[in-house]
Length: 325
Image (cartoon, rainbow, N blue to C red; front, side, top):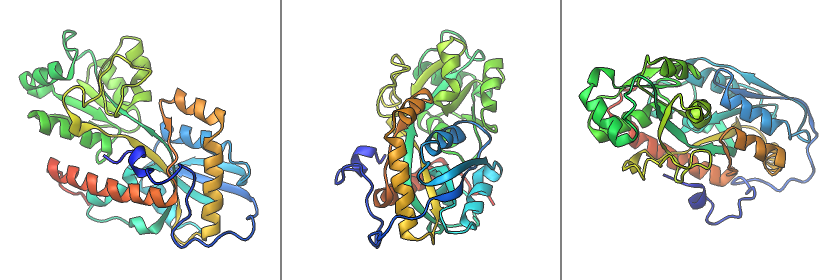
């Protein structure tokens, strides 16, 4: 897995110039209105977008956050692809929209080259948790795998949807541990309620979706997918510590513009993003969402996308997933 450390070994973490970017000769005028599109129902993506955009007043007088769910996020992606390339419409999305989707859909109305990657804004680990459907004496991944093998008809996991990175993390667990782990897709946080009710055995979700219920004792956290334990769940091992290093993963949120956006505008937006991410308001707000501020900009962001695309292609092929229409 490409990490922030590896992608920034030759940089200081400050924005780099886009390949071929001409030095800006003058500051661009501030936009009157800009739009940030996300592809999911209200939840973590738009919360992150609101935090970052709220400190970008130098870029636009008003920044409107629009949730456009549907088609696993592709409605929002396609809207940004066809938008005017003037910096007024941008996409905030998990990298999977660009790095994963080309490997799971037979046809897409876009290609990665239709977008200019501006900057990542944050990264977060995923949490594997179990609910009341699973006996109380199950307290580790090893216990859970044994229970799933003994109860194959009940070995289910919920995620925010088919074809998401979370879907494939669960699929990799089942493949690696040698049991049939049945995926149950939901929209948004729908899996959480069914997990609490005992309708499904487990869920693979962003940490913030399950943290409150875990801390309240309603759910049991088995492992997180990041490289290190979380400060909010210090007793919960990482997947590597639990014996499944192949499941290690971070989800990045990134901001993209249409491909033909002039380089000076891309640079202006990048500068506004970096300034926003340095503020205490954004850093503390991200921490409350269990998201780490993680700013990988321009050239390094493009390299991260390329590396993630190769990684996810291998994972999709390893799980035997058949690309859909």
